[in-house]
Image (cartoon, rainbow, N blue to C red; front, side):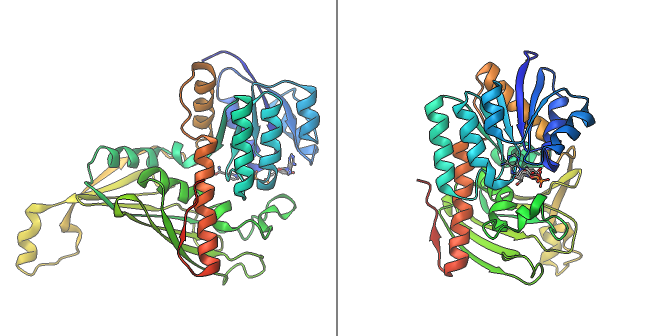
Length: 350
Ligand SMILES: NC(=O)c1ccc[n+]([C@@H]2O[C@H](COP(=O)([O-])OP(=O)(O)OC[C@H]3O[C@@H](n4cnc5c(N)ncnc54)[C@H](O)[C@@H]3O)[C@@H](O)[C@H]2O)c1
């Protein structure tokens, strides 16, 4: 795993810096090129991390001038498809940030290009690498909470001071349920399977100066009659969270990405006598609680990079492929359509 691979980074803003910090933690990563339309950001990155990477303001120039094993696409959402396709065509594997794209047509082209070139395409749905969510999925898959019947997740993130470079987050095409809440949608998909149908409601009461609705609630029908709900708010006045609750016939998991433990509640059968006698107490006697420590790493970008390297160097299957990224976008698009039409929408995974 110490084999040195040559990397190029497209997009040197806030999350580009997260990628850089992660890459520098991994032996065998050599970043030889940086690209950003604001080229001064590349120079700043070189200085900040003591690199000697070449700087480009156009990714086509970068891809024409140098060869890379892996290109990381951390530019704004609308640059993902163009940069990914160009990098794949230039012969690189690609780690593309989430959302894979705002549009399904782009996703299809990205997948087609990966297939044609035989290069790996990974999408940075980072919740699949978050320790608390990994532990929750392990518990569900082991059958500890019995049969799943309801799952809810939320993406609550106040964007009021986060318009992004040149205001890209305020693009009217960047529906919050796709741009940010693709994390929550991907998470419920990962745990409960691919939703079949969705209904959704949306409103616009907080970030009224932004061109998109700021709150969306989606109800989904999953396989095996599991029901799901995703709440997305980009104006909420609270700390960032992706609180997720997973209900099974024998227990419940409460987990998020900002707390160093998850809570597992299992039925306390011995306690039923209290209820028969009319004792309701605080309600907490009803279940046995386990607090399971998890490490806090809500943007575990280093684990994404490790996973991609293991696929490139050892042929391990990729967990978060382009096809998986596109399925998440398909659900997000169905939610937007349901919210706009007021009707239930079947998710189109074609
Ligand atoms: N995985 C996560 O949890 C997570 C968190 C934050 C952001 N993101 C994603 O990362 C991406 C970047 O977000 P950010 O927070 O760094 O935004 P940012 O505004 O801080 O940085 C974006 C950078 O992209 C550059 N850029 C724009 N068009 C470009 C192009 N054509 N070629 C090269 N560079 C270009 C901008 O100049 C800017 O420097 C977005 O797609 C966002 O959705 C993911």
